[in-house]
Image (cartoon, rainbow, N blue to C red; front, side, top):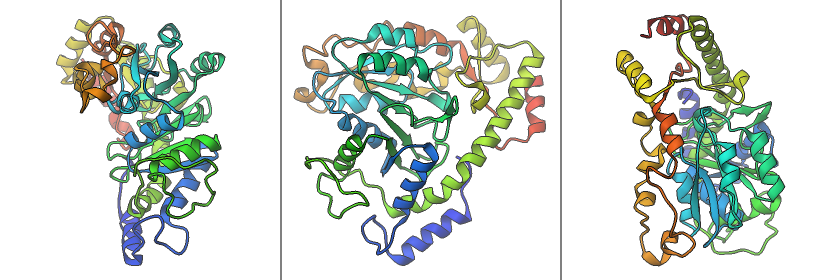
Length: 379
């Protein structure tokens, strides 16, 4: 997170003094509406909707696309557990796709995994690392399969000049405290499609629409959930949005500095990146897991495999064990989902790559002079 301070405190205090804690209490436009307008403009889409978490954004995106029982959704084997849980909670079956050395979806494996049941592709821009969106979109468009961009860990990031979250049918952001910008917990859904937007709005507001938004809903209302964000979240995020691009620019400058130092040093290989000019993340990749482990031991670091926790599919206990809160809502107990696999054989390439990779991203505010010293000190 790119800092938090007096501007956020003042915005929250103003919200509390006014007593406008929810979207509909105020007599004028509140912070949530302002955030949505700013997000849509900044990311380059027609519609943005703030919700209470990135997980909620992912689930609402599935609802917007009509994903349900018997459908298959392709997801990377390297992502936070919320990504596969989103289709699973709606009765659909998440199917794993390998990653490649960019630490994003292996597009060749994606193409192999598509079946007649595939109803959506969820690409994950992990740790500010964009997927190969040109190839993903070419494959998806040729087959008429919608793409959801899980950009929860890449808010504000770019791919060849376009903002992440603006390329697929829907984009999803997270504003959790570990993300680029934060309001503690929060999320957003982004799209150019007015019908998808209306379906997401309907789902996030319990299908009631107790008061009208700026644009009236144009679809029949259906039963939904309550994923609404509060004006306090909006107040914090309104100020955080001002920090986003300056923070990313600082981060990119430090990644460029570290990259130049590593390349000049010549001892280590940098993991490939699909838009190196916009990189806000740096990873080293080794020939073997043993080489990576030895490097980590010498430098008191950890491989991605050892440090990523529930970002690795082997640690998704509800999916590995195929458990839901009731058997009759468990997609893995249906004929369509019975063969779903989340053991070591499901994505061996992903496990191998994560065991050979270590993140070396500088802090976004690390003094530039320290970066060269850190690289030179690597053993």
